[in-house]
Image 1 (cartoon, rainbow, N blue to C red):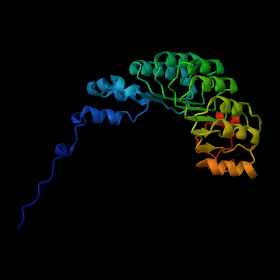
Image 2 (cartoon, helix red, strand yellow):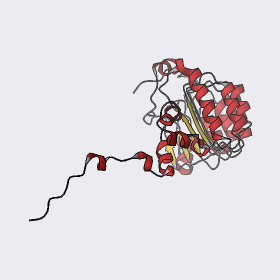
Image 3 (cartoon, one colour):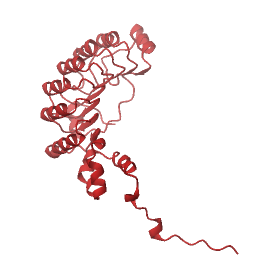
Image 4 (cartoon, helix red, strand yellow):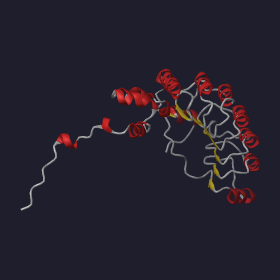
Length: 272
């Protein structure tokens, strides 16, 4: 008769997370957002706190939140703290549902090597504030501005100040139904190195699109969903299909953004 295998004790099956190599723990913690790290993860134990203080943990700062606009001041203080912990090594930052010109200025003064910036539903950031910050981001390669009150003036400054810009997402900037090529012309005139351009719900016309195709010869991905003033027909359609590897048409299914009621009401965006 074969001997019976002994059952492992509960203690033997329990893993001690503190025994993980520090680089593995850091990799796990880096998958959390900055708010989760600062609010809870760093308080678990002294080892985790030391890892969370390492500047390498803050090369990428993700300030995602649930749209709690009553906590703007708290989130801004936390963002400043996260930027301080990066010790000048910040490369990538995402800010959602809060943010001011003063915060952008603070980031720009301490993050000259920034390569990626995402601003989502940041109503307190102005043309002037974003323009001033952009002038201090010469290495910026990717920028997303979605549901923010930013106009062609800031777009022009961004293009002039960020010569390495390869990806630009400029989404849901105006109320539904407007028709205007100002932003499209600003992109065409100042962002010749673009490879990726997303203009969800923009009011550009065929003229603005033609200008972008002329001014951005390296463009490979173009997203025109909900740009209902564009008519992709004839020569313009053939040019887009022939030169753009990944083309999203105005009538393609809308994006999968999760928007709050305030955003839906203000921007007149249909909920899905």
